[in-house]
Image (tube, rainbow, N blue to C red; front, side, top):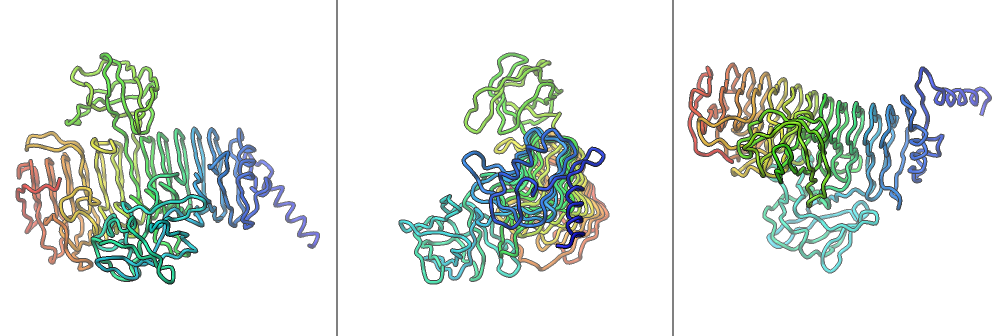
Length: 608
């Protein structure tokens, strides 16, 4: 090498290692991590993070290449960021490849953390993929590449090998994808082949496995099937009790649960941070669960320029948690149960009467004692600064007022190439959903408030949905009135609270849907329950022939127990013939519309 070349490399090295204005940049190569050698980079990463501890404004760079991470007896976490502040991880376009049961990153009790410019994947993912070769009423033949997705037939049943982990197939979560478009097949949801993967299996020629049994549907030959093995193992990014977080230019090609999961964290930005299929490997799947899930966060949540394809659940889900009151010891002391999040001293809490869901005046946590868990429920004994309302008792609920975020979701792309819904949001903060592209198999936007199953809280107060394109969404939605079928309409507002009369109180407030384009092949645009203040205006509705009609809701709108509904100044395609608002537990005066050829009618079919 010429002498000037040596000096050039030396100068670059000194530049990377020399602090400038309190900033320091180091390379993973300084700690023994080398790209493209297929060796375990865990030791080098641990050394780099140890070096970074206590040094704010430090950047760890990975020269572009492939870095492999393997679990060990001591740890299955790669980026263990517990208690670190002011650190940037810059992959510089690298591929981070994980093996076995691993957690790529845990960020706990951190401030000012940035991850950027890399992808996450597994050579052997925890989802397998096959192509249907033949379907009859007695068996299904599926080609499964044994090199990409190793498996064996043991005792006449298929068992998949995942780098030392032996996993059976799940018949509960598997989905069908069109061979050409790689989209979820029209009017199919979970387990369209029934339980055939649990039935007797026999290896045929050429990596074809015959599964004996009677499938409920007969998909076309060439249809691709994603065979899932797990539901929740480890997230790609698991974040708790942290603040001021940036995730930028990241592709999660695979994760063993959510791509991003945030609990009790504040001020979070995802900019071009996405769960997407690794198309170079021919896959139709990405993360096992949601792209991004936010539980009881606060500050500002920003998702921008993100995309989703192949994920095993929704694009994003943003919500709080209802706490169940398990015991009332006195007027200021209760034992509460939570699915996951903690309770903190000084936290403001709304008590709510179960079944009514009306927030009472806030009470403040004075002290909190952790009790032994009960199954999947965390338990706490909470003493309050204030007296509880006298009628609040065992079985009622509490909701945090402290941990609620403002939300902006903009310029994102959510396609039909992933399971279930698009955006789920239940936050009393200010919510803006703008300039996104939706082509979801289920509902594009869901606003709930669940006190029956997941206890995802959050009666909304200020939601604007504007400038979005809804492109033939709801192609595998609610066909028969079963609310579990991936939503009720393109926009689905379905809290657990059920109105019983035209005098019933509402749950959500102030939802504005304006200046959007709805390309629709079927009737349902909006289903809304228990909302005070819905505005639907200046939207453009275009009728298409993309799919046949199949849904149970035969009107543009169905309102159940809503008040102050306004439908005005929309542009309707003359071929769209479902210009009707059907109402239940309401009076006709609750809906105001100056639309020509627009009908308002009462119904008894609410699809609950």
